[in-house]
Length: 332
Image (cartoon, rainbow, N blue to C red; front, side):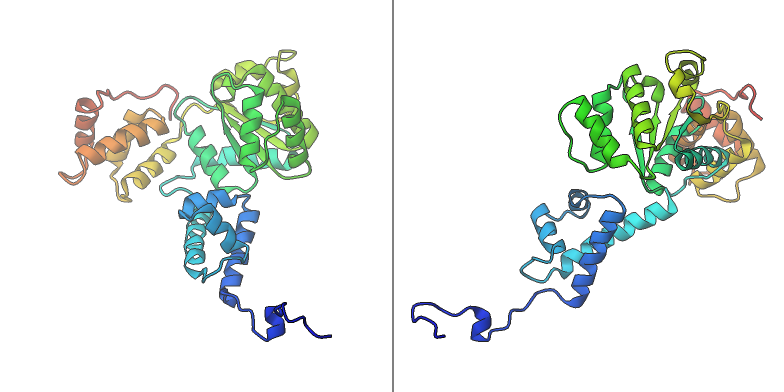
């Protein structure tokens, strides 16, 4: 069959070879990046922001459709994911996995395994929120909700769907059904921090999501959370009856935890017993007071000028933070 004079043959028919700008190494890198995003439940939009690569360019590069060499963009993406992987594996620098961490890890892990409710309560400043952020960052299939005052069911479910990178349907019931569909038969764990601030309706919706999707849910908060859920035959009796682990309220960090935190935060392994004891007496068993008040003040006004001593800490505590040294009741 002959080709009409006014019709040009296609490129293959003319014998011209179609080449790709991708090397075998580029193709392998793109596949690895796509797999990382899928395994870690992260979107391309997330990677765009992290790598500062425009959305259209990133999508073309990862789909193998970029017209020129994609090596530079792929290398940038790989560097971002290498940092993220290291962070997930190692946790936050300076974070101390002390007794509070170990206890709360058991609660979260067992709640995920047995697909029921877990409850974590502690006094303000013992490090609950810091642990929960660390756990969520280093544990796959974990959704951490930081509850806003009087959080409604719609806000709660929208936040969960956003973290799942899922489309958000209109209407409470459609949001609810979509969450159940996505979470069902998975190993996801939902953690609600400051759960005592959640509206009663939002908590009931969370309970039904757990019941129908059969996943674990951890409620964390201050001792006020106990007053809401603990009473038998109370408003949240159906939540209480599903709780598998509920340790006693954490009142303070231990002395060993405080010592380890001080060494890590100050970057000094050889702190004297006198210095550690003084920090302990001022912190009163509060990880927040130690890490967010004492240590920053010591770094700003003490370190690098004179040797760190108990007297220097007392001076900084009194003149900078207006603190008095007082042992916390019940802290050992």
